[in-house]
Length: 99
Image 1: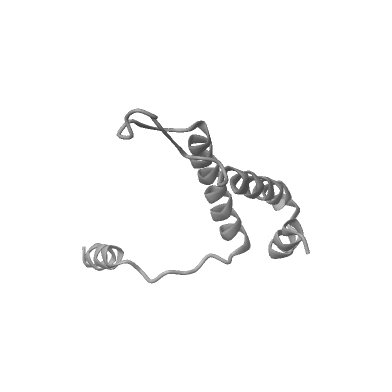
Image 2 (image 1 turned 90 degrees about the horizontal axis):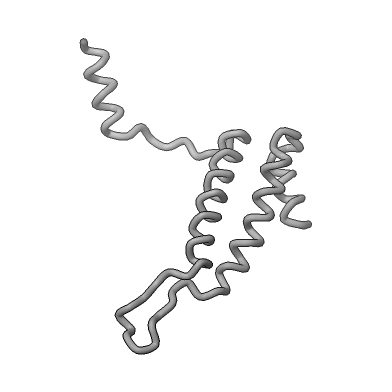
C-alpha cells in the first residue's frame, strides 16, 4: 500500500481532503530529500563562522507547511487527541462562572 493510499484511507475518501493528501505526500518526499543535504555551511578558515544553507531554510519552510497540513487533516478526520483541560482554562472557567 502506498503512502497516498494510506492517507486516503485515513480520510475515509473525503474528496475535499484529496488535494491535502497530495500535498502531504509531496512534502514528505521533499522533506526526506532535504534531510540528506547539509544544513550548515562552515567557513574553512574560521569554524566559528557558520551559516544556514538554502536547504536548511527550505526544510524549515516545508516542515511548517507539512505540520499545518497534518493539523488540518487531524481536525477534519476527527482523530486529534482530546487533551485534558489546561489549569489556566479551568481557573478561567471557575472565575468566569462565579461572576
